[in-house]
Image 1 (cartoon, one colour):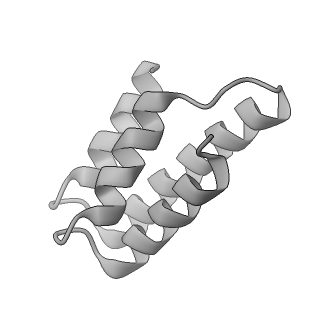
Image 2 (cartoon, one colour):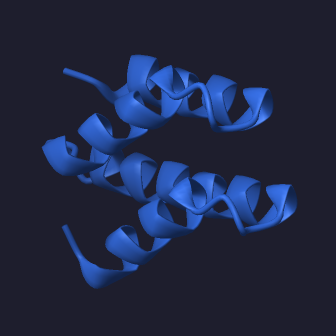
Length: 77
């Protein structure tokens, strides 16, 4: 996992971060997963695991959980 990916995941998990910033970070993670998919690379297991935890979290807002779950279902192998 790259430092950018770690920063994005930390930003999504942070409760102090605004909802819009969390959604933007989630969108960027989606772009990273899509780029690796287009290049025919396996998605990062660490990213998928982190998104899975976010999707199952009761603390994260519902919109963030839904988007995280959608990314997991789309890119999990």
